[in-house]
Image (cartoon, rainbow, N blue to C red; front, side, top):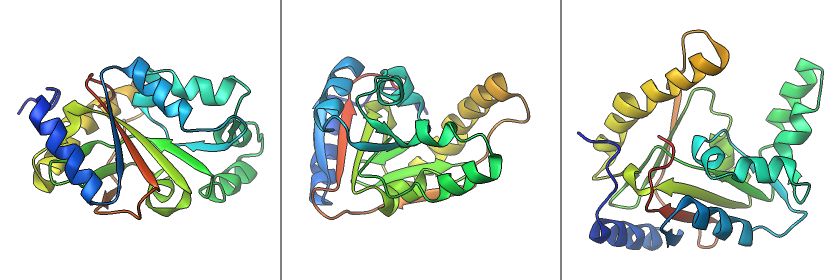
Length: 202
């Protein structure tokens, strides 16, 4: 299975419609550059923003923009500035209720379900409930037929690549799938999906 193949146009359109029927707003763009522009248009300057660790957001420059531009109240920047490890961990636990949450997922089913896996679960509480507004940027290579394929994509494709990234950055044995969140539906207006016709993240 080619887990990194961009979805065909009809599949992108039908998946977007399935997501909308489940209460999520969908914006379809052609590039990471467009995705970054659209995302930043949705967040007023000065807003509190909590972003989960995301290769996709790193690749399109959103992580750096939120943390370093000075135009946003970056939850991650506040937490990493805490020198005491115990206090930093406590602040992280209390940080899930930001005004805006940002991230990505490992798979979107053609039926409109979002599937996200995590080694720690730190971003999943933001996705599930914590953030008042959640914006997810997802390359259309992550569209799969159903939940079964979503799980295969996570274990066969995303996990090995994430493990490789972790080993290069921090050493050790890599990553693991400890927790998986499936979002079946959402109250209208809370989640916005920016679907990008470009390979982003994994």
